[in-house]
Image (cartoon, helix red, strand yellow):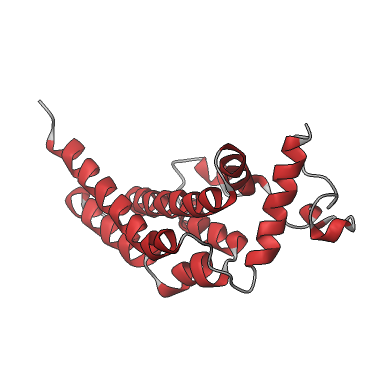
Length: 187
């Protein structure tokens, strides 16, 4: 027999997935990428990783393939770890699919991260922690600023930072909890 808590988690995950799909449904329907202020910059970074992987290099080069082949060492200043899913899906399928589906997956992961983070904070009463976490996740991830970063502006770096921001707040809260050493994970 399936317990009620399991069904509630399935329900929340389904709502998060549907919400993520709704955010990107117009982009998928257009069969394109929304070009914003930073989109071309991040697409060049992804393309550098793609070409590096295709040429047998696990780590991206110094702008050998993208950025007009001028040797721009941009990946030394901008972290590129979270760009690998974009690159891998681009290699396996195509650039449009890789870019849009990775943003969709990151949005879905953002819903889950914010839900679990707020649930972990536990506002005193266990029965209220699930609905509070659910509504926080819905409101936070549907905020115009986060959607603006991922769709219109195309700033993948800031979008990822906003997805991970609830974890930072959780770790700051754990600084004051003397019963745990999980604060060590903050850095």
